Length: 236
Image (cartoon, rainbow, N blue to C red):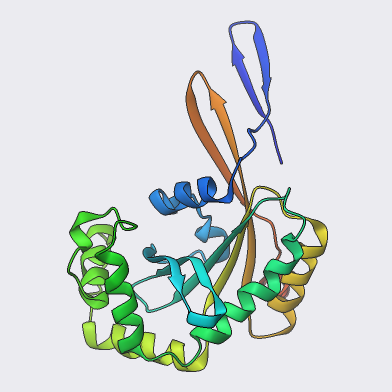
């Protein structure tokens, strides 16, 4: 948790972050503005994500708060928790349970679930209505592609990559909180650094200045594998 300092003329005002009343409020903000997720801190070569599910159903396992995908076919599971919830540490097991239930799902089943989301009131992007998953990601790629990029979107390669990631259970996992307690942070760092999990904690603060809302998101967990790799590169 941080603070903002507003300086105007000779006045200095310390602005404390607002509290989120409900997890759904934070979820709604991220759903509408996924850019708030500091993906560049996780991977400097990240691809912009497209939200393909909200309260994504997994039958007996419950539902994923937000499910996203990028043009490379990487699926990201995002689960939200507020610090005031006493069960916040249980979220680590919850996210792993969601991953296990998404593991080995067929591309066709994922596609049908995603289309159901696109055609529901939970999806507010009208351009996605009646689109398949691959059609939606192709539209998303055209919308977010940088001018300097020379790559083209391949539907066949995308479907192949998504299918492979589903069968291997290779997903990115993010716990999104207003504040991350130390035990949750350490559990996620342990899994991320000593296993094949791609697991992170992100926190965000909301500040209100002159009637406008400002958000600051931070990657809380440390990827020690990348730090070690960087140190080895510098040592050469």
